[in-house]
Length: 214
Image (cartoon, rainbow, N blue to C red; front, side, top):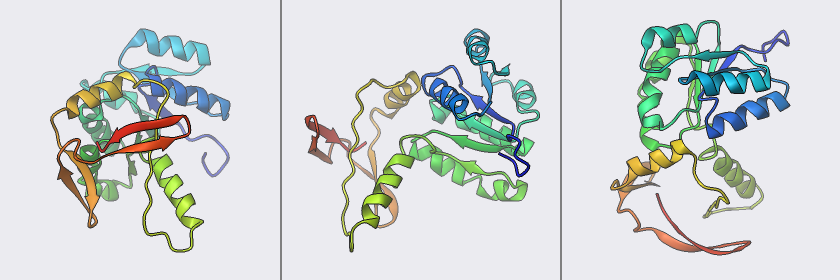
C-alpha cells in the first residue's frame, strides 16, 4: 500500500503457475488486486477473468515486450521458474524501469548473482529481494521463534516435509541440480559438500522420514 492508502501497482509474473495461482488467490482474499502476467495468453487471461483482474502477456526473451509489460507498475513478484533461467531478464528490466523486484527462488546461485547487482540497485533505488517464498521465509521465522524462546541456544535442526509433489518449476530446478554438490553454510561461508554426504532420519509427527542435505 502507498502512504495515501492506495494500493501500489504491482505485477505478478508467472501468475498461472502453481505458486502464482496461490499468490493471486491469496492476494484477492487480502483485498489486493495485482496485475496478472505470464508468457502464455490463454491461461493468463483465463485466470484474470476468473479473478476479475487486469492481465498482461509478454515473454522474458522479448526485451521490448518486457519493458512494456512493466509500464506503470512499482513492484514485480516474479514466480516463473526455474529462476536460473528467468531471474536475469526480469531483474535487469526492473532495474532499468525503476521497479522493485521480488521472487520466490531457493537457488543459492540466484541469490549470489542478484547480490552482484547490489551496486546498480542502490544507484537506481530499486529493491532486489529474492527468496520471499517457502524455501527461506518459514525456516528463518521458525528459527527466530524457537531461538527467541530459549535462554542460550547453541544448535538448532530444522526439517520440513511436504504432503504434495513439486510444482513444474521446482521439478525443473531439481533436475538442473542433479550432479551438483550440496551447499551448506560453514564458518559464515557457503561451501560445497558431496551430495548425500549429510543425511539423517527425521522424526515427524506422522512417522520417521529419511532426509538429505541439498
